[in-house]
Amino acid sequence: MLSAMVCFQVGASFAKGLFSAVGAEGAATLRLAFAALMLIVVWRPWRAASKSQNPWSVLGYGAAIGCMTLCFYKAIATVPLGVAVALQFSGPLAVAIFGSRRPIDFIWVTLAGAGILLLLPLAGMSTPLDPGGVLFALGAGAGWGAYIVFGKAAGQGGQGRAVTFGTLIAAIVVAPFGIAHAGLGLFNPAILPTVLAVAAITTVVPYSLEMLAMTRLPPAIYGVLSSLEPAIGVLAGYVILSERLTAIQIVAVAAIIAASAGTVVTHKAVDAPVV
Image (cartoon, rainbow, N blue to C red; front, side, top):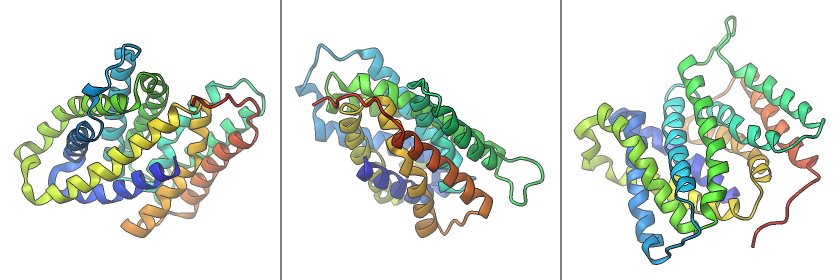
């Protein structure tokens, strides 16, 4: 999971370099399309047919990847990477909270809610965030929550097949948006090296690693163990993109991370991993 998160955030930082050429929609389309081709070569899913794999869970998993990717790229086009990741984390946190009925979890919900509230583009803030970017980040959070739920079920019938077909479905879902925005610009050979690097770093490697994690962890535990993701996003944005957050934004991201970590620390009923 740690390797997957680092790959994803570093790759997302480099993906922003494609926005000027093909936009966020085009970058999402190219990333998913080339990642699907790479995964087909790596996993060769036709050689591991499984009757136990639920096609509806794979379809939901793929649609969740498409929604998450497109919304996240639209978000980081206008808001800092670390902030977008923190807002997106509302999805995994919601999965974790809904999977628990302990009173102490309401404390973590309140803390996370306060952090999200501080990041909203409210009137009177010295440096308000773009409202559209905030909404897209929250939409990416919804996609991430669905990704966790559907991913665990999809992976039970074959991890490589699930990741491959899920990414292919995601590419099909996002492609109309990329084609409508960038058109023939998607076929520009000058951006191919960056596209291949982004596809490998942000999809092939992390999704494969996360599928291994999701099939061995309960959804709630997977969600809360992702608490380092906003911090990694802030660091990647600062080092690679020179994005600096305000003091309030740093406090907000820290509150969301603390809520996630708190849920992990106080979680008592941990299911046995699936081997």
